[in-house]
Amino acid sequence: MRIIRNVFLLSALVMVPAVGMAQATTTKPAQAASIKPAKAAQPAAKTTAAKTPVVHATKGVVKSVDATSLVITSAKAKDMTFVLDNSTVKTGTPAAGAAVEVRYKTEGNKNIATAVSVSEKTSATKKK
Image 1 (tube, rainbow, N blue to C red):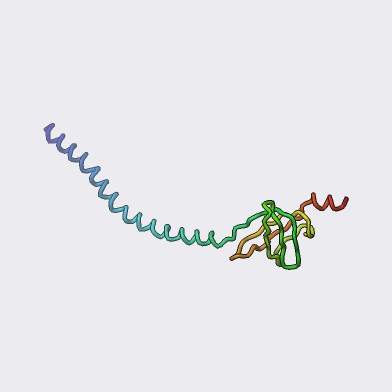
Image 2 (cartoon, helix red, strand yellow; image 1 turned 180 degrees about the vertical axis):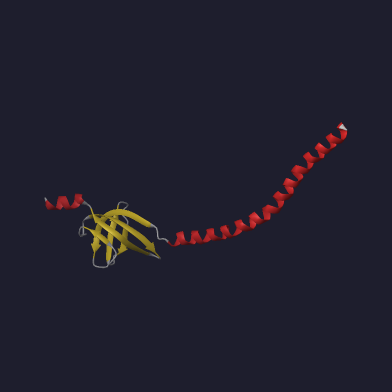
């Protein structure tokens, strides 16, 4: 009688994990199917982020300025040209020789100024 009971318990112990594994293998394909659409949505989010323009910043001295463009000489003695438009935010009035900080985005081969700030140091020394 003990042998029959032990065989029954042993077979029950073997069957429980086997049934559990059988259920686990049937749920994995369903889970994999539900994960695949989520992965397909991720590249769309990356392309949206790629379309957002990156804003850069630089400092320099104004070489020339007019209504639609600004040319500065940066600290590395490199001339940089920026396009000014109606959306460009100007703090102070940039003039030749003034120290400025420029925030800009690059579109193609053009630097589009988003903000131009005249440094206070230069305007204070000109007043004296």
